[in-house]
Length: 205
Ligand SMILES: Cc1cc2nc3c(=O)[nH]c(=O)nc-3n(C[C@H](O)[C@H](O)[C@H](O)COP(=O)(O)O)c2cc1C
Image (cartoon, rainbow, N blue to C red):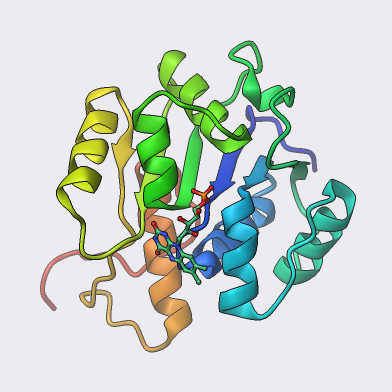
């Protein structure tokens, strides 16, 4: 079965919590989605630090890497180089149904808020804002200083949805994977997508 919906841009920047991006990619491919994936240079350094693995920069090698890591052969996966400002997703004429930055570093938040696109991730975010398409930003930092808060406010004013990956306990997670799934599924709720089954709150038992 091939994906029919317009593609979704999944952008991974150099904040902590890279496993959230990996989980999101797995759910999207398992759901047979078309995914345009862009990983910033900073994210590659965090991959090395958090998972002890080198994330390949070359698109074919990276696709093989993700297919193996996620164990998913579904959907369509298009990998873009971090600095390829001529990629499809750098143009507003390339139609998508939205973009999720998961996780979002304070660096990319600041640059997108300032309208400065130093790499493809930031350019694609700028395009989503100018085209008034859904842009979900998942900032990962703590604590937030006033500059972070102002940048996030500015992005919210420009139309972005701010969805920090904040855990909850009301779904009674038993494992880290339960917690990761909860965070990822709640982020995609913002786009109106039911990414995966979730033990949702339906009132006290
Ligand atoms: C292991 C590691 C964890 C990091 N975690 C965060 C983080 O949670 N939030 C953040 O804003 N920056 C974090 N950083 C710093 C960013 O990676 C750094 O500012 C980088 O330049 C961001 O690049 P990017 O915005 O192009 O992805 C981390 C760096 C490393 C090496």
